[in-house]
Length: 226
Image (cartoon, rainbow, N blue to C red; front, top):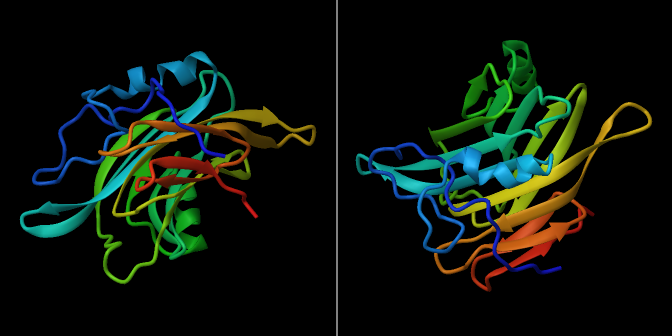
C-alpha cells in the first residue's frame, strides 16, 4: 500500500535550539517552519490517539561527525501510561535511547542487551528529547530500520518499525491502543507519515507498525511484519 498526502502533524519536531554546528534534521516536506510538539500532536490528542515522532541524522560538531536523534512522544489523553519507551536501530540491534519512569526499568533494559546510547529517567507522560549520540551509521553499519517500542504494564508493544535511510530520516506514527479480553493491550489502526527535502509529506494507514519510507521514489508503503 502506498499513501501520499498532506497531514497536519509533523513539519518540525522540537521548538528548541539545535545542537551547535549540527545540520538541521530533515523536515516532513513543505515550506513550513517550526511547529511546537503540542500543536503538532493536537490532532492525534483530539482523536484520543497515541503519537510518536522520531528523526535522526548525521551532523557535525566542532568538525567532528556526530549523530543527532530527536524523539517526541505523546500518549493519548485517556488510557494506560507507558512505563518505558525505546528506540532501536536494526538489524544491528543498537539501543539508541531508552526512556523510563524509574531507574529500575532502565536497569532492566540495560540487562536485556547492549547498554543504550542515551537514557531518559523519570519518564512521565509526554516528553521531547534531542540528543547527540556516539553512533555512526555510515561506518560499516547496515542498519536500515528504526524501531520504537513502549511498555504498558508488563507488556512490550511495537509502535513503529520504519525502514528509512538511517543517515537522515524523520517519521511520525499515530495509533490506537485497545484492551484485550485477557487484560493486555494491542496497538492498531496505525497512521504513518514521513518526508524529506525533495518529498512532500507522505502518509499511509497501515494495519501494523511496519512501513517503508522511500525518499528516492517519494513513496510510503505499509510492510508486512512477516
